[in-house]
Length: 189
Length: 187
Image (tube, rainbow over all chains, first blue to last red; front, top):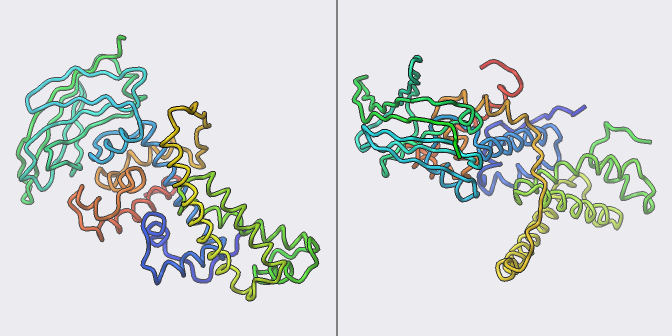
């Protein structure tokens, strides 16, 4: 049984220690404490395991929906087999997921320059729409990156997904940035 | 006789004061405590499970040798001694890795690729995927950019239009949510 720590580090310190270098005056104290305290080492272990798990989920193509551009860059750098589609406002793309694909990403191009918040509304034919608020965007390239869990994607039959990007102003008014159609078909070789 | 409530300093003094191999219980208990902590240090600095395991072996070997030789003058500050040893060995290992990488870069084409078993994950990745995908979009982006893309808070802030301080607050809050989700604690 682990002895509780009399002066435990804060959860935020564990996370920041794992990811970035604390200030020099704190680093020695944190590292020495972690080498002396089972309870705090166990908390750091939780952070390490979650970090490892997030990487595993990302590499396995199990992240759904909108992803930041740096995620795609890292996935490609890691050697993941990535199928990328790029589609502009009003366009339709035929897409699929190949048996060897690790990741399928659709880049929705739009003029995002003036938008402070972008929402994404998606709807499969015959089903209710779903809305994602305040999605990450690449304003410089003018793209929103959409993905789906690769196992879910492979299981889909012929389906058509309509997507709308909306700029939402602080006063709540909305402006359509683009409408897109993704026509998915199963892999046919 | 082993009393597991003895602190590290007491165990260290027992090891130092015994003839070589004379207090196996104390050595075993001290090893049991220190090994995972040093391995964690190695994971943090080397970002590689095998390298971290190697580091733990090397650090503990040196630590026990030093204890037996009477070179750890302040057993109460054993953690400080271990930390110094960790830092020295990590610096050595990085130099070795750079040299090895240089050789690989020159001769890689002549080498057959090694097959490595996939990493063993301590968390249930299926459950974690579910927890991740339930997060609000920006929260998930912060976590993915931190732990997968390995961007610092400044660059993440640039990607998402957030101040670095806001990114830091968001990610430890979101990671706590993931931890709770994995442990079945309702949001």
